[in-house]
Image 1 (cartoon, rainbow, N blue to C red):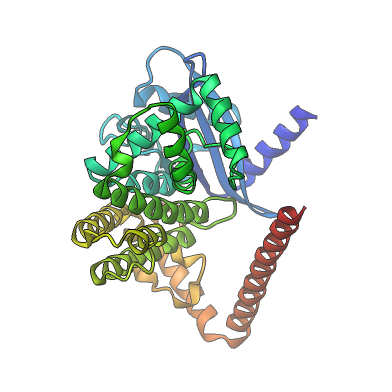
Image 2: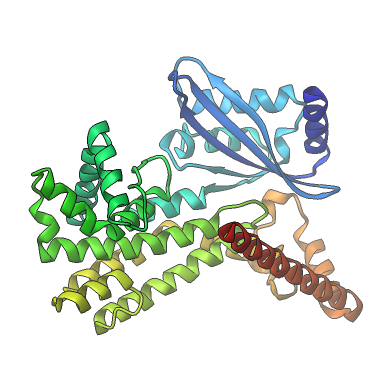
Length: 389
């Protein structure tokens, strides 16, 4: 059964006229270097995304080694390398180097231009780390305190018994995990909600962390909680299957505009979008250093704008599949797809001017949007039922 499924998968890829690759490399628990190779293509059933191979590397892991391994995998499966139109990587030098990177090596072996991207979700995760050093120190202290409680079995049991005794809404703390991108926000949020219990427990154990009582530290902590939760929301929107790159780019651009809104809110001191920080101010009558936090948000906004410039440059090309009726063909890069620009202009003009075809396209798009709304509503209802049970 396994070989049959693999054969059908490879046959679908062989029949596709264009392929997009996603390449990533990492070490497993035994320090074996592995390259994951995902292929996205259009089949008769619609767009598909398949894991073509988990490829092991022996010895060095330079760009040339990875490129040769990927090429060999494609050749072994009878897949024409010239069908590749785009490659997404994690942005590492071995992947994106101008001369010895995987993308540049493969580009030399492909007889047409290809689009290259740094994984959008990975860039979002890197942009989310654009905090100044003193705010990272806040995060480090939170991790240190959590580890001091969870790492010792006795302390951990006593802490769980303590919060159960006082009827806390949570039964335990969350352990931070660098590998999981959503970990930081979830850990901080849980720590904030259990802060009073944590301080009481630490006092009973004579573990001294005076920062937990300092106004400046608490302000940065509350700000960090609010900001990371917003970044978590964005990260979740970028995940999942069947999301076109243009839709993901729209989410990032929308978040950039939200950052401007957050800056304005912070400068005015209303804190409408910073629930934890506002609650702290209301409870303690503290004077919030809005100027400092505004600068942090502005720097984050600039970081987002810089990192996603590559996607914005190809915005028209990415938008074409979503809304061809409003696309200017002169702004589309058709070279990677092997499409004749003149023929595309003629066909698109027919689509735009003939009411029959433009009407059918508009109707189909409306039905697809309605289907997406129904899927979202179904997910919400399922979540409610799961929560209730």
